[in-house]
Amino acid sequence: MKSEVLCSSLRGACSGVRLLEIGTYCGYTALRMVAAFPSVSITTLEVDPIHVIIARNMIALSGVVRGLDVWTGHSKYLLPRLARRVIHGQQLRYGALFMDRWG
Image (cartoon, rainbow, N blue to C red; front, side, top):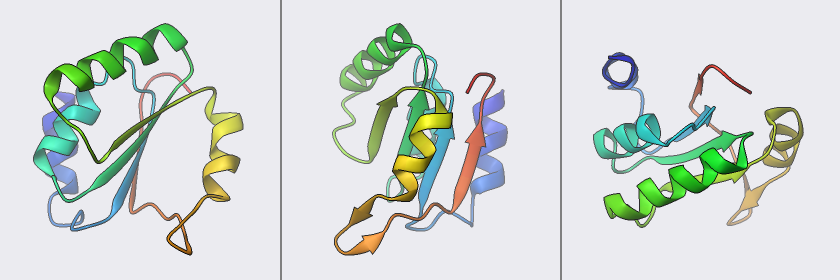
């Protein structure tokens, strides 16, 4: 299963870092990652607004209330915005990137 391989490869490298996923689809992989690494913040990008609605509902139904942020739009436009993002005076940095099928 894709999410198990991903979680296994990230184990040991994910203590308190941010993860970026490109291609949310229904949010399954992002939910698996946030469950496996509760101290990690995950930003996930999805181009299809219908999939974003599904993913946000799946996240809400799962009870995850923090650590998972779903952005709508194409990665071509969202990645430059993420690169300029600052939180608590610090530029946002990601420790790992997972790219799924779509951009």
